[in-house]
Image (cartoon, rainbow, N blue to C red; front, side):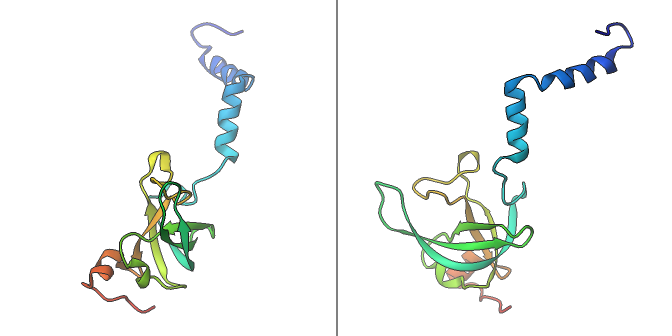
Length: 143
């Protein structure tokens, strides 16, 4: 084992090598590399194409249907389900529309409340804010 004034590089190299014998270190690093990845790849928002509209049942004890869309992301082709928030907003989203989605704001990047498995929400449709469309202040752009 090297020690002394100029042995730092060797000590660091050895430490990196022997780290892999630590079960917890190995598990943590390998899970990070091969585990479930974020479809947005760390970005705050993503652009996608609407594949279909769907209604999803809420978790117990709530009843009612959550309006959602299935979106295919442009950047990597992954498919995610995104919530269309507020009353009547689903009417302004059609199949093959281009939407911008963002995280829904649950803890640790997860879902909120009774909306299981839904981690994203729609904020724009064809370049126009969903809230503007919903309140009638702007019209939907034709693609």
